[in-house]
Structures are given as C-alpha cells and as structure tokens.
Image: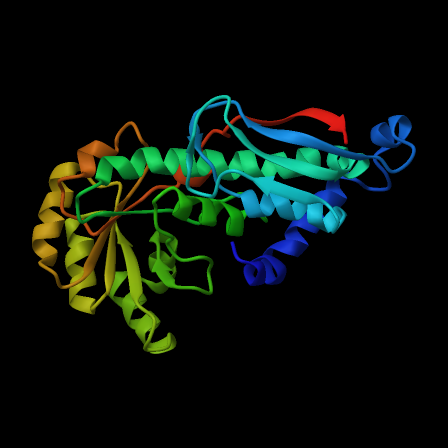
Length: 283
C-alpha cells in the first residue's frame, strides 16, 4: 500500500484497532518500563509462506510514535522460510511493547491470506481463468484482506456494494425473476456499470443471456452443467463460477473454461502465517 492509500483509507482503521487494545494505558508495559528507553526487536518468520502487510505493520508503530524506525529485509509478495529474519523495529521500548500485538495481528492475517491465495493461484497458472475474492471479509478488515489477495496472485471482485452490480438469488426474488432483475438494473445503473447476475440452472442462464447480462455467475452448479453453460454463452457474456471453492476442490474447475473463479475461502478461511517479534533488547 502506498502512503496516500494508507493515510486516506487505512489510518483510521489502524487507530481504531489500537484504541481497542489500549483504552487508557498499557498497564503491563508501564509497570515494567517507567520511562523512555531506546530498544529494538527482531521480526521473525516462524512458518514458510508469503509475506503481506509490511506497510501496515510499520504504520502501527508510526501512529504510536513517529520516531519509531522499521528496517525491513523483505517486501510484500516475497516467499519466506521458517526462521527468516524479516526486519528490525527500533524505538521507545514502551511503543514496541504496546504496538506488538496489533502490528502482528495485521501482518499475520494478511500474510496468511496471501499465502493461501498463492497456493490456489498456482493451480490456475498458465490458464485463462482468473481467481477472484468475494465480500466475505472480516468487518473493518476488507481493505487489508483484499490487498493481501492481490499480493498472493489473486484478483479483486467488487470492493463493496457501491462498486458493482451483482444480482443474487434474493435480488432476483425481489425483482420477480431473472429478466426483470436485469432490465431494472439496466434502467437504474449508469451505462458504464457492468451487470452481473447469479444463475443456478441452465434455464436461468438462458433468460440472463436473453436479458443482456454482462457477466453470469454459475452458482453451485454441477461440473456437467457448467460445461454446458460455457458452451451456451459462447462469448456473449463473461462467466464466473462460484460456490464453496477451496484449495482442495478447485482443480475440478480448471478445465471448464470460465473466465473467473471466485472463492470466499481466500479471506474467510485462510489460516494466519506464524510471525513473531523476538529478542527485544536495549540499544
């Protein structure tokens, strides 16, 4: 993330996380460290994986104290091994102790998502199908989690409800049917917006094509029906398949021929990457 993105979009979220962890004071740190003392601590990787969120990690300490220096030996997207020293954080020991957990929470979560995404993206490597995330993100963590997906080699679906039109089953029900939902979206939305609609069977797909949908999501359809769906579309719309896609089952979807595969698991099921701040000492 660049400095503009950080200051405009991330700083308030990071400050909120810090306020959650420090409501009045860090009573533990203040009990053992009564005054300023310069120190430094090592950022260590304790598990093989892809690192993501180093700027966010750094920003946590900077927001607590602009004098803290974070010296890094890696960049987002790098593959690291267990035992690698990623960098050094240097500054007031009280700040290092108080910011440790929040900084690591961001970095571990984002790196875990990047690592999991990379493992799935590798299975699609060389093909035309792109791997997408979803809106199944942790509240107030979306900007960080979707960034981590990109670091891991995936692509972002719409960022939020204002970012794109996706007519799902309940929207279709509210509108009275596939054709009606697409027509109403065309009437309401700016012409620059693509209209995506979710279909669950081939009859719904045919109706969506006739209504002029731009993107068609094949939701929880069988492999056989998805292959038939791609043949029916014949380039008249872009295609996306979705529905409980994980690292364990994505290979069955590789040869279907869809343009996109979306997976909520990228953000809601990725385990953290184990990282640690160790060897704190005075300097």
